[in-house]
Image 1 (cartoon, rainbow, N blue to C red):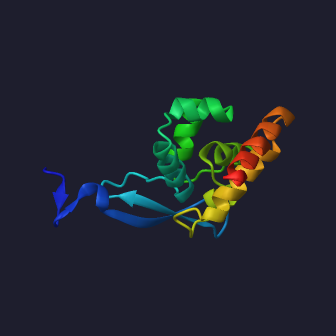
Image 2: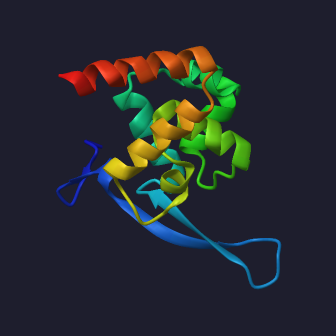
Image 3: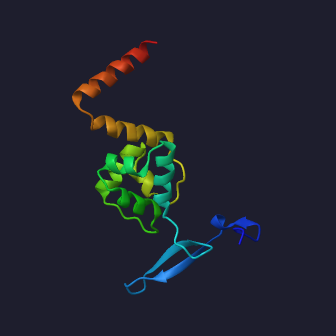
Length: 144
């Protein structure tokens, strides 16, 4: 088979299916591709795209967030990704966005304000020497 069905590449063909969970009356919506393979969550796609934009490998992102490579692979590829709040904060900090952006299913691009907020959160966690250096850099830039 050529990988083309009805003029679309196989990767572009996906279906929504509902599977029942063990809890009464709870259904989980999953995206599957043409072959019925489960696709990643919105969170996973955002993490992968931002990681690739920053030219980070899975291993580098895992090390920067204090995670294993396999855990980060699961975040990016499993249909339901549920990292802890602490882990989500760490991932967002490394990727330069807010955890709110990563968790929001509706938004596809972080805003400039979110990038600023992510920078400020990183600044808040910096040691005093780094903060002082950044202040001096800003003072130099303000003088121009």
